Image 1: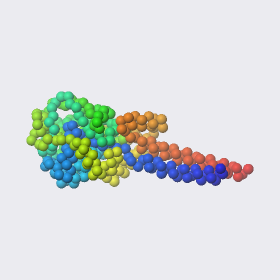
Image 2: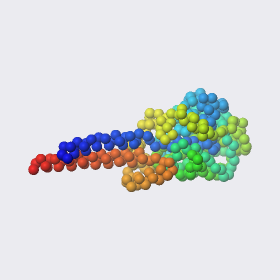
Image 3: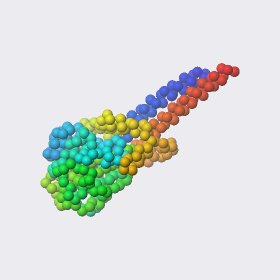
Image 4: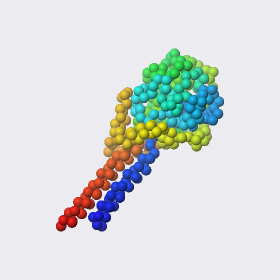
Length: 328
């Protein structure tokens, strides 16, 4: 093979490599889902039916933002908090995660569909349409919580009453145990799922009533698997991607996947995204695959740099050999 042909082939391979890698990185990693026991506001309203919900609270949610938020019930998220939840979500917007799309979830009212709750040991469920590794924290409101006022961070107990890392997946849901503290009357359980393979996090608000019944509000019901499957057809969210994110959120996700090697939240959380050796990256990918995880994007990006470097080396070496041969 002539030196000219070698250079041409190497250049062609170098040009195709980024295209192949771009195809592999086209779908960002994601974890979607919501609390179903106790049922979150968004999941309860999805179960009632996005087009014609039954409860006044869910009807008001649709009036505030249309039916799409209910079809996208498993996507109340932020792409990049990396543990800095309080600095990213302002008071009064905890249930929507500060996203205008889900602003109807923040409405302070006493008639949100709710679940009966009691102190003591309880099994919780978080329906994970795309499960990934991470830590799931449950917080409960303090004594004296007033549901007629917008929810603030200071309304929650300082520490989670339940915290689990890499919870077990059973029939498509994270299932884990927690000990509910003694409370009375109407309260709210706030969940934060912080992924460990990405800075992305998910949030839910579940209305609960201690002392029996639902305190006069409609009883909350979790969406059935049939409802989930039927609703997915109208969802703008790929259950393994970010189809429903806004342009700015998609851009933020891409920025982290492409070039952030280290991100620290203001509350000390830290997520490593790049810089792992190929062997370590492979090992991590195998671990994530065992739990339905997907952490390939940063390593593919790093691999792209390696391919470009190797390709450039081939071109340089071939050209040098050709020059040397011509001078003999």
